[in-house]
Every structure is written in C-alpha cells, then in structure tokens.
Length: 190
Image (cartoon, rainbow, N blue to C red; front, top):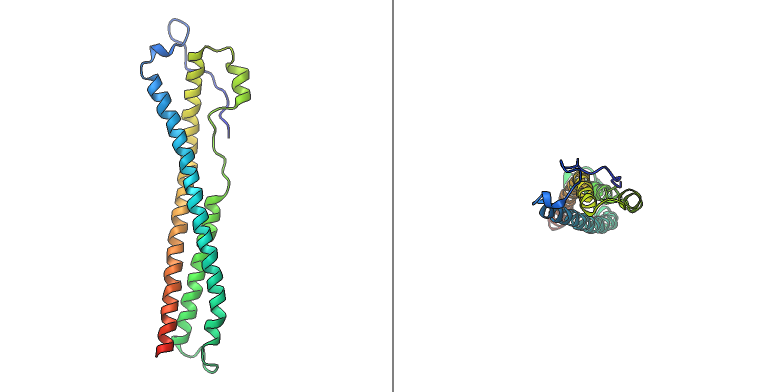
C-alpha cells in the first residue's frame, strides 16, 4: 500500500512552513528514514530465515517418508501391532512428520507476499508537491515515512511470529524424528 500525498502540517503564524522553525526536524527525518531502511532489512532477514526453515522442512519430510517403509518392513511379520515396542517408533515418527509439515505451512504463511506501505507514490508526489516549497515537501515526506513505518511494523511483527512458530514446530519435529530413530535402534538391540 502506498501512502497517498496528504496535506502538510498546519502553517505557522507567518503563513508558511519552514524547517528552521523546527530545530529537531532534521534528526527526526533522518531517524525515520533510517527506521524504514531497517524495516526493509528486517523483511529480507525474515524471508531468508523462512526459506531456510522451509528447506529443512522439505528435507526432513522427504527423509521421513523414505525411512518409514524401511522401518515398517524391518518389524517381524506376525504380531507387528501387538507390541508397543514396535508401534512407538512409528507413532513418534508420524507425529514428528506432522510437526515438520506444520512448520512448513507456517513457513509458507510467513513467506507469503504481504502488502507493505511505501513512503511515497512518485506520481502523486509529482502532481501534488511539485509547486510546494522544499520545507513543505520534506514535512510531507516525514509524515508519509511515519505512516509507512507504523503500518509496516504490524505486518513485520506478524511475519516474525510466524517464523518463530515455524522454528519451534521444526525443532519439535526434529526432536521426535530423532527420538523415533533412537527407539528403532533400541528395538533392534533388544
């Protein structure tokens, strides 16, 4: 979503806006611009993490699907489901695969394209601001940067939460997958 050009803050008593009347303007302007740049970096970092998580999810599900037939075929043919010793590794592996699949779905949710606000619509700015003074234009830009920052922050927080949930689901899935492998080895030793 692009913030549309809005009217600038109310004029001063002299009738015009001047940056010199606001000593902190430049600092606020620079810090707000830097915050928007950091938001872009945060978006990229979250997308990179999501891609790595989804890759691991795919690898683990593929490995589990490949291991499951071997796991089932290694049990004794008669009475396979009569003993919990043989049922537990399969059940734990299945739950682990489900957790990893949930992690994958959460990663996809985090990676999906969201609409982020941009601080300026070039055509609208050109049409509306071209005849404004530099001070008025910079005030309008500051206003738009603040609006974009506030709107983007919510979307970024949601994306970060999805990445966190996906990471936890992956960790649970890997732990269950490892537990199933250890249980399987223990049944072979016994």
